[in-house]
Structure formats: C-alpha cells, structure tokens
Length: 465
Image (cartoon, rainbow, N blue to C red; front, side, top):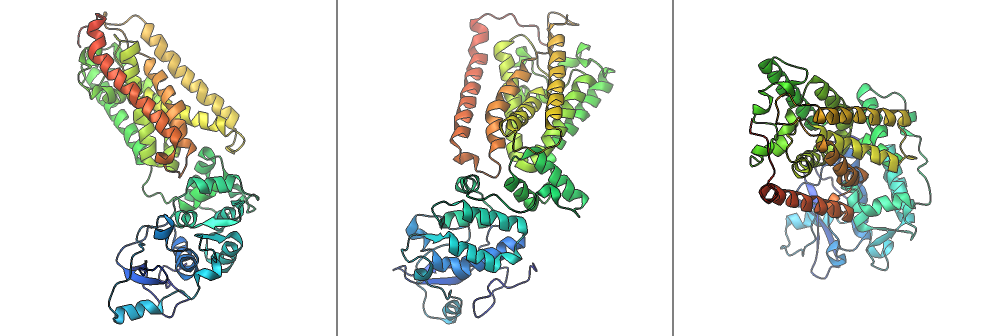
C-alpha cells in the first residue's frame, strides 16, 4: 500500500501520515473525538498494518468499544483518553469533522468493551484486501479462535500494535478452525533473502502461524550481530595467542597460556571479569572449531528469530553458570572456552524441538538432531579427556569440563522458556520468573561459596600463573 495514502477514508477530510490521532472523551464519557497529536504510534513491520489499524480502529472500532479508561484497559502508545476541555475554536471544529459516524450502541449495545466475532469478520472482509494474506489469516484465526463469540478490545490493540499476547496464542491454539491458507513452504517466486528467512522459520518455530508471522515481520534490521561479534572476537583472540605462543593445537600446554588476563583461574577468582572473559580463550584449534560451528549453526538462526537480547541472555547465563559451577564442583581447575554459552543455546534448541516434535517441520530433523548430539558428545568427551590427562605443568590441572554441564542446565530450564515464548513477553510468563529466581539463587550461593568455602575447606589451590 502506498505510504502516502490518507489515514481516514470515512471522514470528510484526510489526515497527514506523520500525525497520529489521539482519542479524547468528555467528562461524562458520552462523546468521542479524534484529535491531532504529535505522538507517534508504534511502528508496525508494514504500512498495511498501520492502514488497517487506522481504518478499523478510528473509523469503526473506537465507536464500537467504550473508552478504555472506563474499562480498565490499556490504550496503544500515542492514544490517550482524557476530557475534552478546550475552548470552541477552529481546531475543535476540525476535530468535529473527523468524528466517527458509527455509534457505540450499533456494535456494542451492552457497553461491555467487546465486539462480536461476526462484526469483526465483516470489518476484515471490508478492509482485508489491503492486508498481507498471512496477516489476514492471523486476524481471521483470532476471530474464529474465540469460542465465546466476541473479541476483546485489548486483544485487538495488542495485535494491531504488533504485540502478541497470551490470549492471542490461546485463541489460535483453541480455535475452531485451522489456518486454511497455503503452507509457507509451498510459496514460490521468493528471493534469496526471503528463502533464507523461510528456512530459519522452519528451523526454529513449531507453529505455522508463528512462521508466517515471522516471515512477514522480519526485515534484517538489526541483523544477527551478537553471535557473529562473539565468534569474531573468539577467533581474533585465538589467532593473537596462537602467534604469541607459537602454538595453535593444544595451546593449553604452553606455560604462558594461563598468564592471560582472560581465563578463569581459582587463585584469581577475586577478579570478577574472569567468570565471563574466559569465553574468549580456547585450549586449541580443535576446541575452537567445534564450539564455533555449533555457535554459528544454532545461535545465528535463533538470534534472527528471538533477537539479540533474548539469545544474549541465554548465552551469558550459560557462560556465567559454567564458571560458577566449576568454582563449586571442580575447585582447583581453571576454565576456558565458550562451551557454557554454546551448550546453553544448543540444549535449549534441541529441547524445544523435542517438546514440539510434531510441529517442527525442518527437514531431516531426526538425523540433524542426532548429529548435534554427536558433536556435543565429541566436544564434551574431549574436555573430559583433557581434564584428566596429566597436565604439562603440574600441580595446575588442565581446564575443567564442568562448564559444559552448567550450560546444559541453563539451556534446559531458562533457555527452553525463552524459546517457547516467541513474540510473548517474558515478564508475563510465571515459569520464566521461577527459573530466573532459581538461577539468581544459584549465582548468589556460588558467590558466597567462592568467598567463604575455599578457606573453610582448606582447599589446596595450584599456584597462580
């Protein structure tokens, strides 16, 4: 749809696209006026959303639902309900011209804040031709998914503001009809970037409605920068120490390896940054290669779907849990490598695939899952072998393998909750807060353990590097 098209078609004059309307009701709440405001509505992925929002919301829906301030419901950003206390002026006269021509009694005779699904479908039939077919399917599924035959105002606002609520998901899952549109996989004529987005959708999302929603919404802005940046930094650090130590295989056997300010060492555990910075050091090219392959193949698609913030949260929680787990269970060993964060992402993804096995439509998923488990097992076996292999410079042992297990635990708990709630607000998920509180409690206990347990247990630590 042309971005320069007018916002209102049912009124007597057109409003410019750079000014969004705000809603004002008088003190008695009997009149609704559309005012000019400098606030900007949330930017939707496509202009069709904004156009349909204006047509449905301001031409019909605002006359349908009562004032949200009287219903205890939230208005979308940029829209407010307040008393119209201005003097009669030319500006107010212009406002009067833009009043909706529909009345509340026409669509909501009981003044309940709901509209019937029949009326909602009629509105979609009138204006749906301007909407992307995938988004129209989602709206129709929302209408058909409400068994009580009515649509809540807040559900509609969340949807049109590109915010998907739990009630929306329940409406889709409990709806009386399945989405009848063609599968996203069957669409032809897609460009290379679109095929990549479609591939990522089928790799990570278990429901067709989520895949179509993601396919229509993703814009490569911002790109999946976080996992790529971490990987580039790891390679740069490895190459730097490879040339400095003149060793690329089993760098850990060099006497100067642990003298770097990055690895975690039990004698230097008071240097708090080492609990995270150890992620950039690896024991050798064999260690780096396996971690980097899993990190890119799994982490980048997950970041494209769930965003850098969520994937970064899972990754860094796995990294921190890995070093703290070593400091509690393998108290004399150092830690290097990104395995804690990598195993958190991979285990969360694999668990999500298993939980939603029937819904995941990625090709050769059983074979690929087996290969992922093989890679994880090989890397974990290498770490276990190295830990118990006689160290090159005793009494300091080789790096611990327990960080892998810490990452797996984070992935199977906190990570699964994050991946299970695509486009849902994590702060509204009780399970997220349960696992987050448990994780926070573990971190606090590990911190106190590092402060007091070493001296109380009289642990014999290796000398500092």
